[in-house]
Length: 89
Image (cartoon, rainbow, N blue to C red; front, side, top):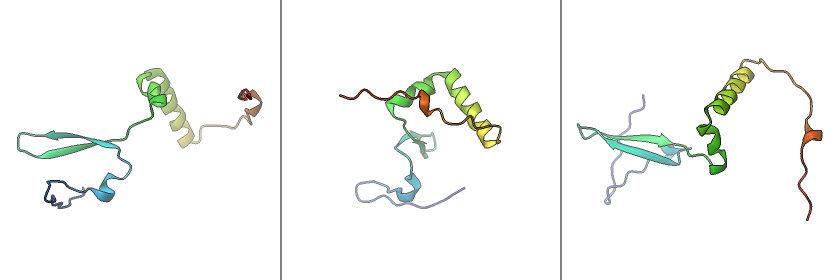
């Protein structure tokens, strides 16, 4: 566990610097002992949000990632011939 002392500036701000790398926002909570807890969030683009609200699709992606990590995959060649090309204006 990382422990670090951070001091607020004259306006009460605390700079997290490298501690916040890859984080787009934080949810803050203050417990009954006045401890401040920051829960990091990494937001996703709206166009990808559907995956996180579709439990079946998300489970399928997770299975695929697990299979890939365990090398339980095989190549099927290029699928380029099935790709749709955008209409040219």
